[in-house]
Length: 343
Image 1: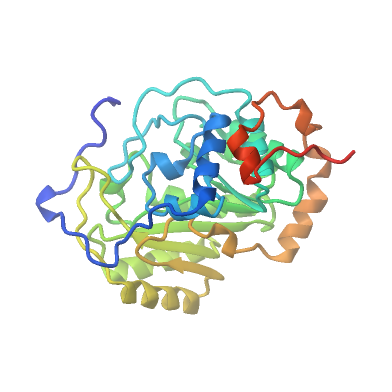
Image 2: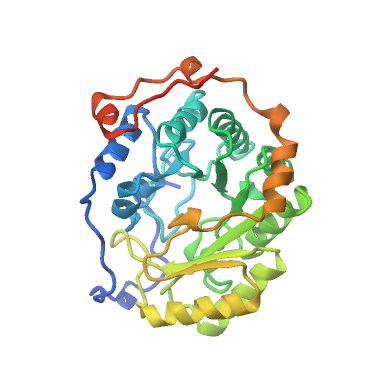
């Protein structure tokens, strides 16, 4: 694998539909909160998947003061044909990154956070312990927050997956990305059945007390019957939350967009998924895994079970103990300033 050349083209580039339809629109920033969020992320030296994956919704989400934090660096060990995140030899993990993420959630007063990561196949645990530490740090600094993780497959190592589940996230997300037939073309090293197994095992590890979530990209040449089969497979793996969005080609080196699906098709697929039994479905051309993530809240029994299970496991941290920069003057003016916890 070479990190300098990006993903290898595995589909005929002549299939690409270059002209974007009118419904693929990106909102540019017009909210001061966008710049405040950007400044805060810079202050704390954090990486977001919003920027690294060129998410089309980053203007909207940052304008609302939300972001999806990407831990374990910005260099991925895999070279998936759809993904804009760079492929290269990763850097060493940063020991203080979990508390920096935690501090960001506190300054932003988030009630729902999404934490994701690059694939770290260079690490024995695939970065699972780093996820565990980040979840625990966020919960310690920001009690009551809903914690959602979007994880790689950890090469299906159960003990690594158990590290993440021991930290008790409220929502466990692992994306199927595409239908079974296209998986070898679209996903580097990943396997369709492995992803389904990871989702099912994650839920079983906590006796069902977690909401499981997955996402599918459309427009890569999949057939309708294959999409419906993927829905059934996810339900069989006990997944209750589904996202579906349009694949958008990051660069000419990436996979072609074979088709732009009309919004009405996404609406129809959403209704089909709900009728099949998914509890919550987000479906639309610009939908991504973390788009409006806070619109879904886990069942109360999940929330209550986790509240009972984790109090003794949290880190004993106070905001003044965190080895991170103070908020910049711009953040103070915007209302994202640090406030000390009440003793």
